[in-house]
Image 1 (cartoon, one colour):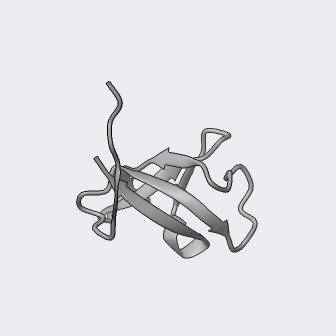
Image 2: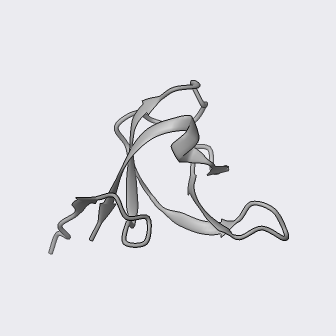
Length: 74
């Protein structure tokens, strides 16, 4: 059974993000690819932030500042 994804503006409901453009040519990010959204702390005393794991296995925080993304909920 395939899951249906729906475009959303809500980070709260989003489970995946698609990279629409890579403004700063961040390496190991594939245009058009859908990545699962992860949540975690970038800094020890910080709050949980949205991030993705890039194609090389690195955590990329602040992705919405670096790339144009579309978010999807299940």
